[in-house]
Length: 620
Image (cartoon, rainbow, N blue to C red; front, top):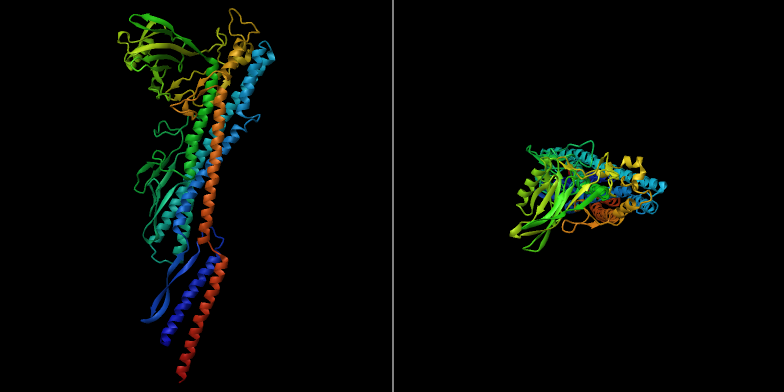
């Protein structure tokens, strides 16, 4: 090797060492900087002056495990989802109160039934009557408060979605800006490495909000997609839009029909300008946004449905009267006559019949509907009970015509007289046999000669379960339920149910009926609220249902916490592994610094020796 070659190699070594020293200094200075990835110099052998060996740099390397980074982002998305769900479930548990505490819904309900039991043993006791009304008012007010709290949680989820979409848009735009900067730079230098660090931080933030998939392109650029395949960003960023609704009520629910939607939806305007509803497409499946959506549109809606079921069942158990039809014969047909004049909107009459070919028993529930825009009613969740909504606005003749058309004369309906319907089998065809017919109506008077009474009201009117084009009366009923003001004004009606002859003040008929209805009578509950299934709807007493609701809520909260705890362990372990490979280790940097100092000194000595040799040659 000539002196010139030796000098060139030593100078090149000094330059590379200086660059490496700068990187060590930058690593140490940014050891505590969030998102900073340790940098190293990519060195390579090069030819010097056409021969010999020298050293150069290919660029700056970021010391990270990309596979581990992808795994960490995926698990971080799941961790953010699990943590947020657990937080909401815990807040929901706080709303319900600790089991057995004096403020829990179960205790409040028990206090009400205990007061009724005391009244049934001492009907004439005015203090016992006041105790029933006071306990009922506390219970109705608690249901009102629970509804307000549940809708408050939904409002928090709505606001959380608005904030998350704003943060996601910011991250997407920042990633697009960095992609554009990288597109104009081919150098793999410190500036490029710094841009990649910044972009990784925005990707990490985005992964907390939603599940994403990152695809590497040319010149260190990336394309970001949701895991469902919707592109979010490339050289340009798609734009997310959210239209928050200020007031969230039980009736405000998400729908893919904009005219029926009462909460905000997430719309993505793609890079080419096409709009996509990400909720309708189920494009976001993890991260905080998915957790907010699940709580707002599923969990809390179901929670409200359970409260509404409790309120509605409690009200109807005390006010609904079922009357059996009387046998009717019109040879060769047979069946029953039933008076439907007392049915209010939402009330129904039931027909039970047997299919003689299969000996299978079927049940029809015919619901009075006064608003034809509500028809047809949704299919019943009970496979053994066919629910038919009938427009009552055209009179009874129209009702008969509608039923005969819908059921093809099996059974056959006709008007006997006034408001009495006749329900018959198909006669000589003998395809069906009518087993029973009954009508269930809401008693609206405090003293009507029967123990049923409108104890609870929907604000100021009797609750009948009416269905209109705007929805069912049951939705949000727990927030509107109240004790009948007329009953509060005249507590004697807790006992007196007949005026002629006048019910004795010591008669326990009505108090005992109220107590039995709320503690012993088995009721059917809709599986739409999440208790029971369509194939096996839950039936039991109101206390049974209440315990089932509280048990389900507690179990869901525990499951959510366990999931969050497990996910946190996974995320923390991955973070530690990633940190071990990507973060700055001061001890390691100091060791590298010593090596570089020695390397620098060695190259300097070569230069000094070459200088001395050139000087000696010149002197000769």
